[in-house]
Image (cartoon, rainbow, N blue to C red; front, top):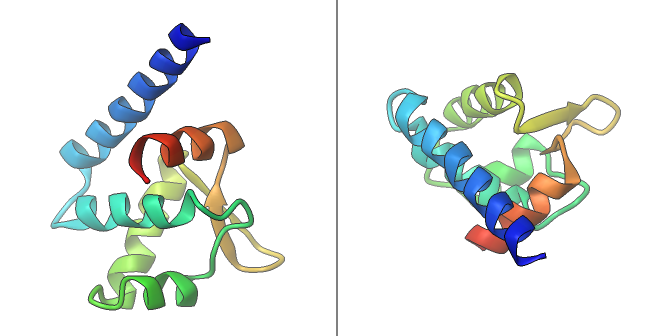
Length: 100
């Protein structure tokens, strides 16, 4: 069990490193903040909810960053309720365990 948890934590850090190295113009910080906010809610959150949680960030930057996170396989947009959530529950759980 400890080996699995260690491996999963390592995967989470690799994913965070990918964001830090590849996301443009400060969106790496926004992406990390969004993921920390989203990992606590299994149902996900709308753009408006996320914007309210990180008010200092322009809504257009949040939208662009969410698009990057969807394209990179971190998140999925549920069209029925306009909520962004982690694409895999296990990834969300480990992100929560490691970063929140």
